[in-house]
Amino acid sequence: MIYLARHGQTAYNLEGRFQGWGDVPLDETGREQARQLAVAVAELEPVTLVSSNIARALETAIIIAELIGLEPQIDPRFAETQTGDWTDRSFAEVAAQDPQAFTSFVELKADWGFPGGESFATQAARVTAGLDDWRARSETGVTVIVCHGNVIRLALRAAGRDLPERPDNASLVAL
Image 1 (cartoon, one colour):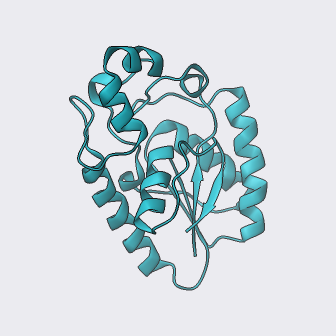
Image 2 (cartoon, helix red, strand yellow; image 1 turned 30 degrees about the vertical axis):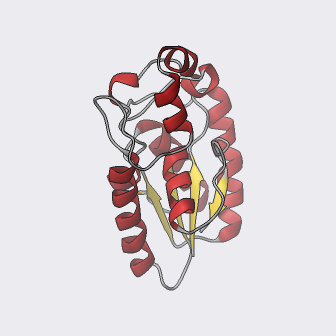
Image 3 (cartoon, helix red, strand yellow; image 1 turned 180 degrees about the vertical axis):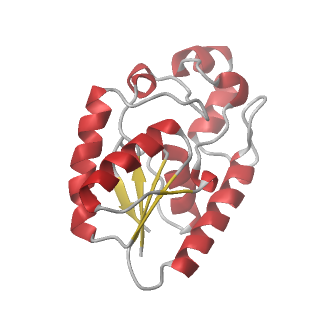
C-alpha cells in the first residue's frame, strides 16, 4: 500500500506563490505540521519512507524519519512541477496577467505546461513511473512518499479518483 504525504507549510504556501523546484524551507507552522504528520505516519507502520529531492519535502521526511526510525530514500520523480518562469511569482499576479494559463494550471490540464518549465503530461509520466516502481518494491508493506500537491493530484487522476483543488499541507492520501 502506498500513501502520499504532502510536505508541511512554507512561507510561499502562506503567500500563495509558485515554488516549483525552488528549495523553499518549511516555516515553523510547517515543521509543526510535519511533526503531527509523523504521528499519523507512525500509525501506518511503514516499511519504506521515500521523499522528493526538494528541500520542503525532504525536511518533512526527515522529521517523520526521526519518529519512525526509517531513513528517507530520495526519488526526484516525486518532485513538484518545474514551474519555470512562474517560480517565485504570486498566484494573484499570474492570474491577473494570464487568466487562461492560470486556469489551465488550476485545472491540471495535461497538455498545458508552465512557460519555461514542465507540462503536467511530462510530470504525470515521471510520477506514474515512480509509483509503478515503488509498488513493485513494496508488495509486503506500507510505503509513504513525501511529495507535493501536484504530485498527489496527478497520482489521484491516474488512479481515477477525484482531484482536490490543492491538497492541504501535511495531508496524507492513500492510493
